[in-house]
Amino acid sequence: MWLLGFLWTSAGIFIGGMVAWLFKGINQKAHIIYALCAGVILGLISFEILPEAVESGGWLSTIIGFILGMMLFKVLHSKLHFKQDKESHTKKKIYIRTGLLLMLSFAVHNLPIGITLGANEQPDLTKALLQTLLFHSIPEGIILFIPLILAGFNIFTVLIISLLVSMPVALGVFIGSFLVHPLLNTLFMSFAMGMIFIVTVTEILYPALHKSSVFKILCGTFIGFGVIGYYLHLL
Image (cartoon, rainbow, N blue to C red; front, side, top):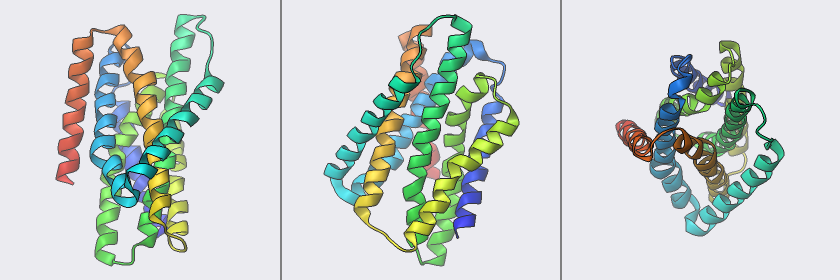
């Protein structure tokens, strides 16, 4: 089961990475792509991660995990911070930093998904969970790889990172087969949610607003939000 969860997640993220690859070479439109991605991320939080976290462990543990996630981001952000010297060099570093923070966030988020999969003993539900895992990972792959591809990473790197981000699913399946606790799931999900949210605001939306009009960025964000909402509804 751990291998299935790992492979299906890797496949979804890799497909998303291939979609993101289509945006290679459109650096001048990166702020619009970022606005769309921000909407998709906020939609994932609103329609997928937040309801699951609250249902699993309640509002209090969700809020605690959310705050801890934002606090960890602040620590990591300060460690990865750099002075803006040369604009072109700085832009690449910003893309890499954003990609790394998103990579860590999604990896943490994938652990409770694996735990849920490992704890399940119903074949029909397992099949449904695996299908959902595949399609759920596609937008995450798009979001994750756009900044990395804009930073100049190649297709081989997309494959390697897809495997790395999927590893917590395999670990979660192993843990879920022995130990399951709703509070643990909630803390992991809300922790990842806090990191994803603050990365979206500070590393994606804020820079985009500096490079385009507020109206264009908000339109792009709402479009991304609506698209992911409809996509998740179809699942």
